[in-house]
Length: 282
Length: 183
Image (cartoon, rainbow over all chains, first blue to last red; front, side, top):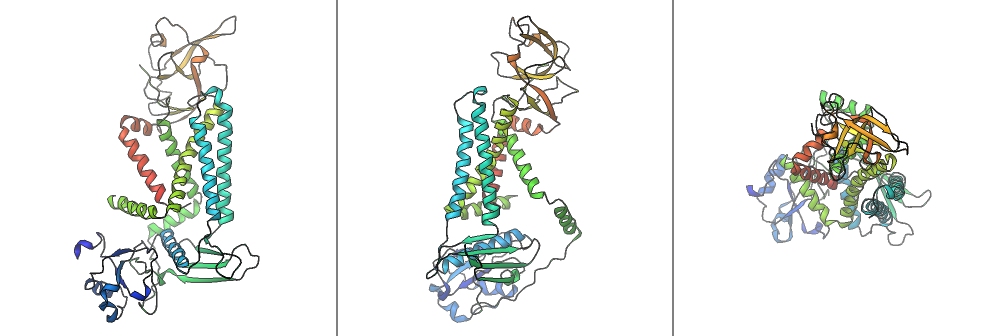
């Protein structure tokens, strides 16, 4: 059984009883259901109560699911995992996703890339191609701006927009928020496109879904497993406080990352053009 | 280091299952690369020069420009004067050279003849020109140096000396962008 364990820490595995098994994609990794003896011992130390024995008995109907593990300090990843689980859960409930805005964004990006490729591969030699290059550059940056507007204002904080479920006229819009370095995950579900639509908001501590080691429990159900809710709070070291100050004061950090990345790509692009290296003879 | 790569590969495998997300991430990567390319083309348009950003590779212009400096070129001005640092290409050779203009003669029909020399060289560039050529013309000049970034070009020189580093760097950055979900 040691060959199946992760290299860094022992994998946390749970049994999915037959009743909960669905055909949907799971975020954790599935394993063949032959590892029953190993599971209960590990679960003890992670403070999760083992489900009853009658579940362990029908081995041919249960699956072992290796839970995915995240670094609990990485708030971005935690939010991502919760968002993905939400999307899977909505699919499970039988509501399909509305891909309209996603398709529009993909189309805008494709058009921008087409303009870029025309600018690069047009067979016109340089001095005569200046007007063409100018048009392509302007068009590219215009498309890029349109894309940014779509992402910031149309999508905003929504992680998913659905088609209308049965019996309703508008689809759902699911918005989630988690403050930086905050343990609370806030989700709001409302009708898409309707003014003053009824909405449902709920806040959870992420400790309800993750344990101290960062294992993510996909099937939180009071019947099957009882998870002690763990409060996620850090003892902030001096280094973390300094880092927080740095990030808050240099709020252009994200912009800086983009600039550094583009610059690095510029250097690389330089290498693919003919005149990039100068050579001098003494 | 290795488990970072492994984690990225696991993410990539997960991405492969969801084709729509994969298309989105791939286009995202393409947009980043094309942004750099479009900035380059934009600079080409504005400065009217074929290669608006170049890297100095040898020390013949010391102490003004050292090996590894990045130079920004501008070709939009048809007049060049003595004392300008220019990048020029000798006919039938593909390697451009950056030196300073030493002498400039304007003939009666308006054509200009130029002679160049590197600051750190002992003699002028007549030895470098094509056999029988004594002067350069304005058409040979690719642009005047208008700006400089010190030492940053060492990255390009390293990438040029060890081409495998180029592919490793581009590959790793591509991998990270494909698997990061910021946009």
